[in-house]
Image (cartoon, rainbow, N blue to C red):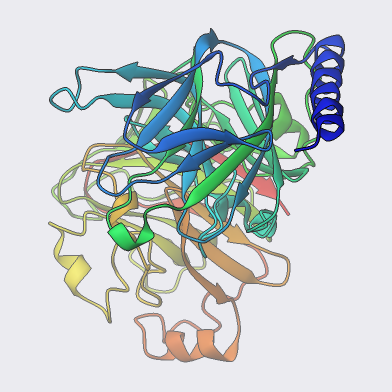
Length: 455
């Protein structure tokens, strides 16, 4: 490099650093050394080239991690990243920690992560909880921005960790938002995933312009309506409220709910305790308990989210577009159903066609395409989501991942109804509006954090 060019580059880097400091930002990488960083895991190499940290993957080494000496609580982090191929998965660690004794001395990093995912899945900007709960916010929850990350180009990431809220942007587009209380302080790190196939070793990921602000926060713009994973039970953040979300269950009362075909909440069979709404077991018989409960209000187009927890062998469901027309139902409300079921123990999972009575399926109509990674163990809380747009497009989600979609009232939909148990109900599932229903199927199932946004 010519002396003049070198001096010009040095001056530019110094000027950039001074400007960042002056604006309230602190540079975490000076462009020349790894001062302020340390490697704590794995065999991937972290070198410097042309003002960027270059992480090079190594086969069979386990995940590799370069972390800051400093720990951070509330902060805004910005950096640029470039990935040249679809296999170089990486993450930015946030509020994280490292246990060198875990995994028989191999070590374990745990804490929040912002994903850098150039694969066809397109989950860059998604939020994981490494070493604890895995994915918190797959970007399928906000699929309109999944194409924001550009392979082979420099991409700008912005990450805000302020109080209980973590938000991400990819190239200026609001991507993910999680409200959580598990971790509030830790290091920032650059993680490179392990490579199993030696032929894929040697791939490079580039990081530069890494800077942080720890005071005088200026929150970035988040347009209204981005879905929020709020892990505080029965809570709505200020942003959610401004986006139009409303709680259907307040955590302490039956307000807004009545027994199906009634004007009052059941006097038995349903219990509200410790922030949960639980249908009690009654021997697996639908007519021995408190019965189905429905919202007082009816809905047309909406985004509905709910947490549910099953007991072994349980069966329940969340129904929508329930019209409560008596049609020889034995008191059960009829509508489109998001199936809530223990697939491993309840016999209904093996009935129907092609698994269309399993967990998160459109009951007796469309099976859910579930991924094992996102199935939580019995007794854990799961999150379901149902989106119905004004043009009658419907989507089901389970734990952040879309498992099915269909067009309500389409020819394909009607063909499925014609070969289902609903074939005797005229215009089944096509009502212009209806109630939301929680099903009493005689098994203990709990619900909480039931929220809805009218579209």
